[in-house]
Length: 145
Image 1 (cartoon, rainbow, N blue to C red):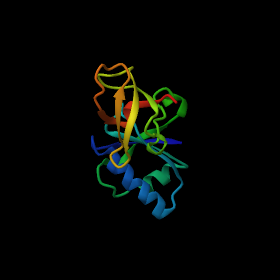
Image 2 (cartoon, rainbow, N blue to C red; image 1 turned 45 degrees about the vertical axis):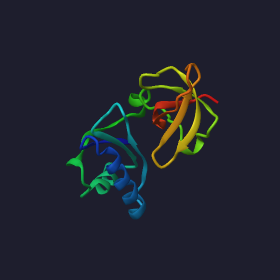
Image 3 (spheres, rainbow, N blue to C red; image 1 turned 135 degrees about the horizontal axis):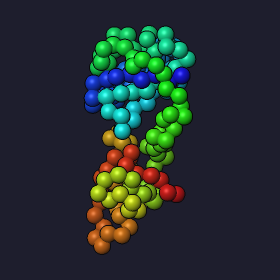
């Protein structure tokens, strides 16, 4: 079952980190924690029951109201907006990527450097006259090869 939690906007990643560590420490049956770029101020939690989620979010900062949004979500309802992003460990220099967000959307480029800590890649556009390195978040690219 998938449950929705309301958070402070911009703190979704912090909340997910806290919940991830709490899940490991307490051995809760939580299967996934999801932050979606299109859904600011909310995170999705896949767990075995509502009680598990209540235990998980108890006394966690940045959760609005300290409780989950009523009801749960069916996976088919959100399947269209769920999209896999490349794992930082799978991105290597020399790979071809397509930019999926920003002013260069739709352009193809070559990865020249990967910064795993910042989740950024440095790319050079194929169709650019002058090869200028561009740094962008890895979530804004799609691997092509």
